[in-house]
Image (cartoon, rainbow, N blue to C red; front, top):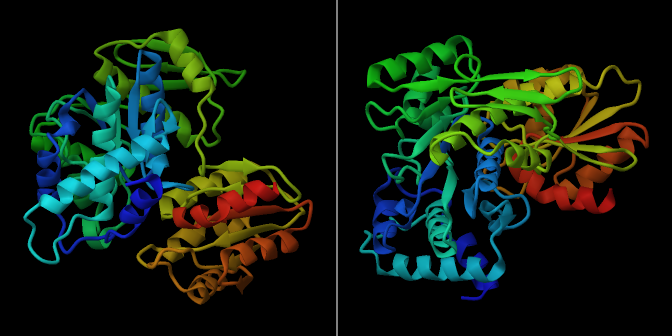
Length: 428
């Protein structure tokens, strides 16, 4: 297949299979020679912060000597963004070659009718094939949904694991309590696993994680306890892990939560590397780190803030960032689309005090909620709302409402970012 044909084949796969489980992906990878077990790996699970943490971990592992792969999701502009080598999307030729090999193996699998390899499973297999072909020294894999039944839960039992956090999301699939969700995510760890890093969590989530670790005899290093991060007067960061201290780090991406992600990423990368990482190389990697679609500013009149906040915890982090901008007399207008299975009420609640209007739209995803429902939710939260089903037209309408000195915020769904990031960037 050429790159266009590879994209079309991936796009044509079902998003969700008829059943959850790792049997299909296990059979597919077996047919491909189990490329996921070729080198040391780091598995990143959690409700929020997975992509940022995975990409940071890959960046600092690359600083210790590459090449290093990273498998993340979803993408914003192109499928190749999900399969990264040394921080860059897989090139066209390598992408087509990996997908071609996966398609051939898929066609040979003796699967029952209706039980075909899914889109995410095919991409996961393509990533592992590409990493093996590139001769990576290590790779980082971000879980797509949960952990126990996720297609990434096929790594070596020796793989290190980062649990970024636990909050209520995908409750219809993972359970409706922190305890249930913690169990699903930590299921990627074998019984008695000691190569575990736990992100900054508190309250009920922390208790749920601690209980699950005790039940399954898991031993983890915890951000805020075994791993510390401090901010100096000049804004530079110092991270202390059980193995090393990294001082003078300059993290350019916005959001206080990214500092916690950095601490977890460094500790997880050390577990894969087998010890402390080279400090100067780590500092350089962190200095140049960027994260598209996470509190990402696009200059213009008005400026645009893009964030993939798609659940209550993500919305709360975005609200904190908006609060940090201070009071403004100029309008802040949000362009929002939310998937039907998300908690719209609790996504809007933290954002309502910090925005002045919602332009409700609908992303390209087939599970996107009707924009009329998003507008009704915004109205219930006390926000003026307008309906514009077309995302590009919604962005134009938001810019007009904000005026040159206002602010446009694109949020509510990572899939909306796919629709609008390039448009916003081109105009900006």
